[in-house]
Amino acid sequence: MRPLVALASAAVLLGSGLAWGEAQHIGGGFHTSDVLAGAPKSTGSAENILLIGLDSRKDRDGNDLPASVLSALHAGDGEEGGYNTNTLILVHVPADGQHIVAFSIPRDDYVAVHGIDGYDHAKIKEAYGLMKAQAEQKLADEGVTDQATLETDGRDAGRAETLQTVRELTGVPIDRFAEVSLVGFYDIAKALGGVKVCLNHAVSDSYSGARFSAGVHTLNASQALAFVRQRHGLDNGDLDRTHRQQAFLISVAHSLQSSGIFGDLDKLNALVTVAQRDIVLSSGWDIVDYAHRIGDISGQNLAFRTLPVLRYDTVDNQDVNIVDPAAIRSQVQTAFGITPPQPPATTTRQLESTSDTSGSDTPSTDTAGQASQDPAPDQGAPVVSTASGVPCVN
Image (cartoon, rainbow, N blue to C red; front, top):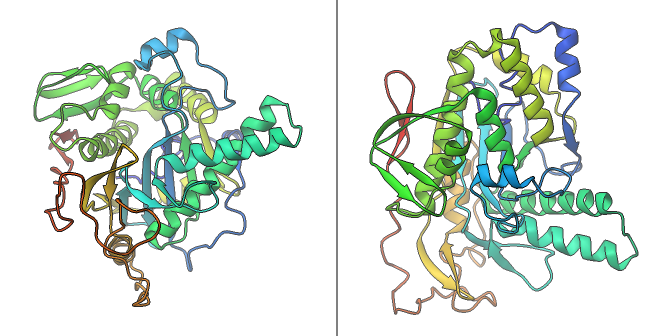
């Protein structure tokens, strides 16, 4: 399967047969950000790419979405969501481009953050929005009033904070990123003419709008968004939602390969337009060259995983996931073929305290008296595909 490293932007070009001149024009049409300039890079030809999915009900420029679009998104009046990164997937493409590994990062993982006033820890999904708001306030205090400048610079600050936070949590460099907003998921599904998935059990969730019987479904754009957003009514909540996000990406990749979209200029143009409008890429990413290079590799496979959660807890009246950063770094670095460094004994932390956020290394006990040694939450069944390539989830 082609790697899902740009949420369909690179995949739009893979195997398309477009003339090189036309492809170069397409490749130059993406919005980019240079927040990775000067950041640590992978050695050799291997690459780590972070996929960022924003829950924002705004467009790329910070404008409110039309009421008709919000209705189709089943996303309230547009004020919900803020700038949370409800999808974070770290993809490792090895030097030979074949055995690709992708880790979903649960959005409620309670992790260390830096540079955000009043916070030393936060849910990982909040890093983007907290830093964006702080950067915008600082600019406003300096007299900046242009909304476009505030939005652009604020989002770059949020991206930089998210990238730094993921980099520290996993212990690996990030070489590229691709960011898409809530409406981008919707637009991609619409441009593809639907997304095919399989549900092992019937679901009905009024929050996301996901109401599906068991079996194979071809979801329209609105249904596809409800599918990737569902967490209520699932045995493992947000951890099951990560599987839905993975299934969406698998289905998109399969659709691009099997549906003949590259021979349908109308559909191809629609998908390219969506990618250019809704996706932000890291600067210096030659998407055309990358697509051609990756597209020439045979025998590729992609394995999805989810970062482990030790247990659930409550901090400041918010539900959070307690994680073991040292174990996460070891798991990710092993999966990525990196020899994990030996952490100093004085800084190894088996648990991050939730009853005291001052930095204590003492394992905590939650408000119900539940010891931190309780069994880890069930990660749920992994995504598996049918013989015809349709991804199935619980």
